[in-house]
Structures are given as structure tokens and as C-alpha cells.
Image (cartoon, rainbow, N blue to C red):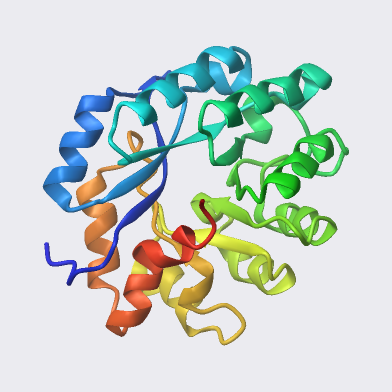
Amino acid sequence: MTISGAHVLDAHVRIGASREAALPVDTLLATMNRLGIDAALIAPPERCIAYHNAEGNALTAESAAASGDRLRAYAVANPWRGTDAIADLDRARSAGAVALAVDPVLQGFDLHDGLLDPLLRKASEWNWPVYVRTGTPPTALPLPLASLARRHPDVTFIMGRSGATDFWIDAVPALRYAPNLLADTSYAPWDTVLSGFGADPAVGPGRVVFATDAPYTVPDVELQRILDWPLPAADRARVLGENLAHLLP
């Protein structure tokens, strides 16, 4: 693989053991070294997103601190926990977290029920991007996420998985509707979904971030798809890392 000197930043991986797959940190770092991925944003396994938030935040913080700046931590907090969720985010930020990751399905809320709003206010205060996994009806879809983003214009949202797979058709309309929404590239074929992002003048490569979503994918394939996407070198560099790097401290 040839990356032509671009700084490559993976916008989302999950470390640890989830229900269907596991990703030890040493395996992640070895894969990053092999593929030329410079850094990655890491989230904890599913049970820690849904329930064991403090354990998950400790795992990502410790892994990031030991990585020599190769890994950056997402913070997680189930919004049902109210003020305890805010306290979890405060502790995660103190330990080095740089972004918020939420999953409406795992955490059991609707994007429009207002439950997430206190966490989003903290993300706004700290200038954190917010990753929201999409693709599962009825609570985790691109267009409702775009409406949420419109209600919080000072927060940048990442549309995790871009609605993969049945709701890819809604990804570009969602991006058009909410200018503070970014798409991620995981699972998306360049000749259909990604080309739609790149061709739309209201979207373009400036609104897309590279993500492998490991361990649920094959990172080699996810990266090669971006290298095969016929983009100018400057636009490819934006997708591979520059767009997301601008949002992180």
C-alpha cells in the first residue's frame, strides 16, 4: 500500500472483547504499523459502552497513555445515568479523553428524546467531536442524527458507519442537511457510496473521515478502498487524516 506521505488517522476502533470480535491493543498497534496508520481513536467494548462506562474509560485512557501518542481515547457514558454520566465524562477528560462516543442502540435511547443533550453540552464546552454509530433502525439512523446535529450546531458529529448498510442512501441527504456532520468511510464501497460523497458539491472530501471500525472489518480492505478511490492527493490526505486531526487537541 502507498499512502504518499499522508498522516493517517483511524476515526474509530473498539479495543477489548466485544460479543462478536475482540481487538487486543498490541494487535491493533501491530496492524497500524503494518498498514502505515499513524494514530487511531479508540472506544471500549460494547458492554462498557452500554453499562460498565467507568471500566471502559479506564481501559481506553490507560491504552492511550501507554501508546506513545498512537492512540487517542473516546469517552463513553450512558446518558440514562444523568449526573453520574457527566461525572464519568469529567473523569475521562481528566485522564486524557479527546472525544465522545455514543451508541443509541447499545445505550437504549432515541436521538431525539433529549436524553443525550447534557452530554452534548459538555462536548460543546470541551470542543469534543461526537461519534454516533448509525445503521440500526429505529434509533440510530443518518437523518435523525442530522436533525440532532442541527439542534447542536456548535458540536461536530461523526456519522459512524454512515448508515451501513441499508441506510447508506440517507447518508448524503443527512450531510447536506447538517453542515456540522461528517461521514466515516467504514464498509462503504468507493465506487458507489464514497463516490457519492465526493461528487456532491455540498459534501465533498472535506466532510469525510477514514475509519476502519476494527475489529468488525478487515483494516487492510478499509484502507485500500480509500487508496483506490480516485481522488486528488490533497483530497485523499484530507479524508485519511487531516479532516479529523483538525478537530482534536
